[in-house]
Image 1 (cartoon, rainbow, N blue to C red):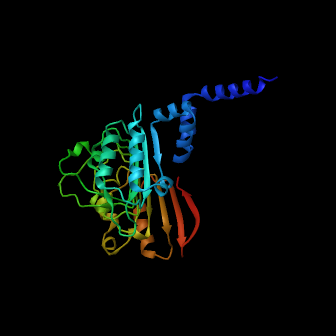
Image 2 (image 1 turned 90 degrees about the vertical axis):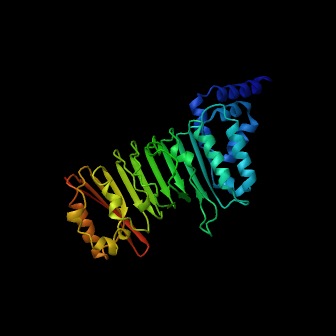
Image 3 (image 1 turned 45 degrees about the vertical axis):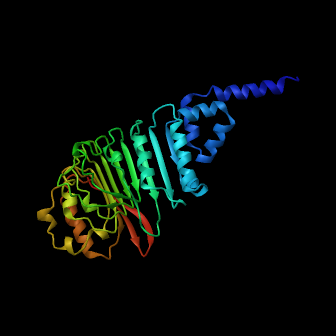
Length: 320
């Protein structure tokens, strides 16, 4: 009887140690940064799992808890302790004091690009009050292993000394949030051969992000800045799903365009999702109707109504 509690303790310990490796990694992914650190410190078994864990997330809680220098030092130490490739890395922080330097971001991204990174999310708001952003490092643009890339609160500048064929070569999903795109002065139209999903949310200068994406399936944008028609002309014939905010689509420039004559036929487009739609904008409705006429294979139209900052239910129309 006296040894029974000890047996129970050993059994519990064995149950933890005998968990499958993938289950242990999933448990770590459900914890925030502080909880993972505590778990790794208190248990050698979990510390070993943590050192082999290749999907890392550093969130806003970490940035609020630590200053810029301490945060960067901790992230660097964690990366250097990895015993295997880093498949996924997320850094979503804002307004660190003192702020990180551009060189800090460059060094961090170079390390990731050399260690098999496949899913990368960088959202680094340097100072939301001044609107100053970091610049996307060139090594991120040219990294061949990245498949899913999400960037936020950064400047995108086209690299001058990088081969166009190496830009986002392996990327299948590309998402931009609160980005500012600089003009492409290289005179070259980059091609992203494997890109299937392209998303813009509240970005400036998306007209400067003109690319060729022969396998693009889904194009989504919600932005206050109206994109020129030439931005869509390259993608319209190949995409299968189009999601966009209606009202920003219409301005004086688009009003003068005869969509029926100049807009290409969307031969593969099957789903259109309209957000922030308002029946009060008759010209926007006319424009949307003209676009619908260019979609011979369309079978689903989804409309999200927005009136006076009140969001109404989504209406879905199936066309057979």
